[in-house]
Image (cartoon, rainbow, N blue to C red):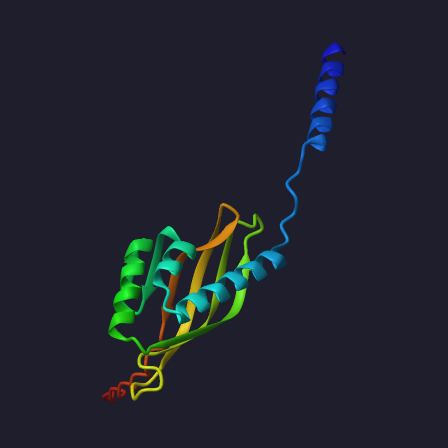
Amino acid sequence: MRQMNLLSAVLATALLASGCAAKAPAVDTAAEAQAVRDRSAEWLKLAQAKDAAGIASGIYTADAVTLFDGSIRHGAAEIQAGMEAETAAMPNATISWSTSDVRVSSSGDMAYETGSWTFDPDGDGEQPADSGEFVTVWVKVDGAWRAAADAGTSPKAEEPAAPEAETAA
């Protein structure tokens, strides 16, 4: 009987302690999704201003990765150098993007954004603009959303269908 009373006391204490334990506040995923959208808008302004240093130091994580149609860059320094080289090679280029969706983890420390982009290598020049879709993985670092991975691609042109092989009967 004594063991039963002791077990009951231990269980009651454990239940009471767990009920009094501080619970993490629920994450407002809608507010966090808007915060990601706001960061993406800040990024777009920096991109349109051709501010590679501002993007590398203010948007990307130090170990970020970008993947765009065969071009892979690792780390903010490599990403910045690549953006600076592209700006030098295409000084009149324009870029824009729009967010389609943002999904935030229930913990509120990771999110992903999807959307579409348009890039014109010579602005109003003769070269055609390119467009496609992107996905960006965001992580919260010291309370700020930062891009950890960014990937985009252009749709592949439809390949002509292969002729059907004739079958012998």
